[in-house]
Amino acid sequence: MEEFRLFLTAASKATKDAYCSDLTGFINWSEERGCPDALAVQRNDVRAWVANESNKKKPSAPATIARKLSTLRHYFGWLLQSGHIKSDPTGNISAPKGNARLPRVLQHREIDQLFSDTVIKDSLELRDQLIVELLYGSGLRVAELCGLDITNLNTERVAMEVLGKGDKPRSVPINAPSRQLLNRWIPEGSQAFDEAYVSGTRDPTALLVNRRGNRLTGKNVRRILLGLLRAKGLTDRLPHALRHTFATHLLEGGADLRAIQELLGHADLATTQIYTHVSREELREVHTKYHPRGKQTAN
Image (cartoon, rainbow, N blue to C red; front, side, top):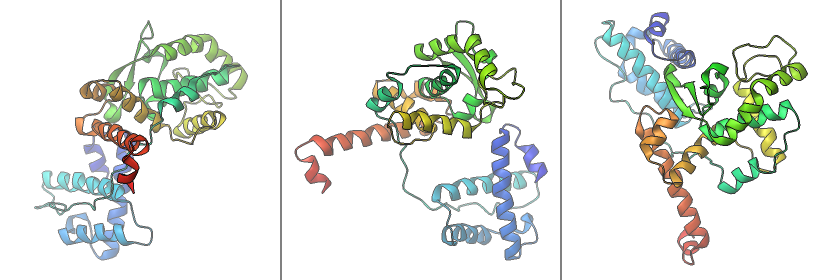
């Protein structure tokens, strides 16, 4: 297991942890089935494992099975490449297909409601507003937001360097509202936040910290967003929905799909193309709701 982890040099720590967790689960299951070790696993064992994942008491979702199967392909591909096995037991095995889930994006009116009439009273509210603005305005992943350092911002604060999946850096534009908030946050707002709210020793490099002085966590960001959404009377959303909304609104505004791919840091254009489906879904909803014969089609 440790050798395989070392093999994943390009992967982030989170990806390595996820691979090892998935792999440990499969190895434990295969040992209970009678396989002495991973080298003895056959194709029928992998097929049986896929079936078990689908039919166990708490079945795994198709997307989860696909992710775990991808881990097994990486692992057994590495064993084959290393000469430990003669054939890959995951060959020609497919994960069960599920319905593609479209991201729940915020509508334009919801974005307007979220950001309009906001009066920032203190440094805590300034930090929270900056967090949400960066998620929507720059389309950041939560991990990218939490990993931001002050040094990631360029001198004019019109762009920032973020570390994406696989530790791949990319430059992301900073929109005007985010820039205004950043100019208030650095350094005065940040210092005021530290003095009023931070109880521990502040991380000196992090752009944004929690009340303990540590970098923000995903849990912190989820709690902050839920608080702002509920304060504005909006439906609960996960922070990643703001990234989806960023991409969808760019596409609706006429942005090129490849430009959106670059902004999001997607390695594959196919990943970005899901947003074309989101926009088409919205068009279908509008047609069903407003066209005289749309309601008849829906019934």
